[in-house]
Length: 228
View 1 (cartoon, rainbow, N blue to C red):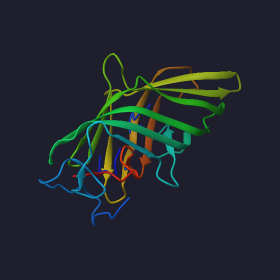
View 2: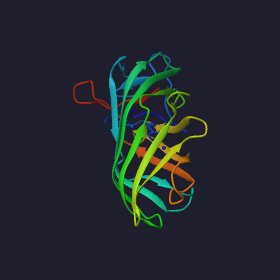
View 3: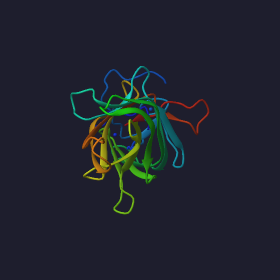
View 4: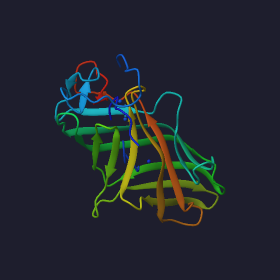
């Protein structure tokens, strides 16, 4: 996802999910320009991102992706590395809504402090690709379908062996905020509910992550992407 304007965790990415260098505008809010497309590079109201281009981003430097059991606590799973990749499907004239296909999202270097668990084997985003929309207002929405819901599978080590926890969203969507000022896409406390797994899997996981910078890797030099 691009050096987007402001948005609003499967995950499983979850994109899920999911993204995003040049001079940033004075404000973090998206800048709307009737003369530009919704997604542009390497500046606000710059060149339109081409349909078919691939947009990628990793976690903002110094941050983690987290799946905590409450919105204000620190119990759960923390991943030091995460990234996403999305293909641009439409990029209309601004103001408007661009669409993308979230084709990949990964979570690695994960640790757990959940009582009874001793480590994280994997965090996997299932049922990709997910449809993603980006509005000129900076709202990023990742959507699943009835046949392929937004879902993440977490495999944890425990004193009794490996356990598998499967999480889904109740609305089949994840919502984030894009910021041109920080070239980021941020998801904050996106709710995932346990779909299956033993009692060691906490019932609700709140997904938080910030991806930056968001870049168009199909272009030479992978320029930053902005939302207009």
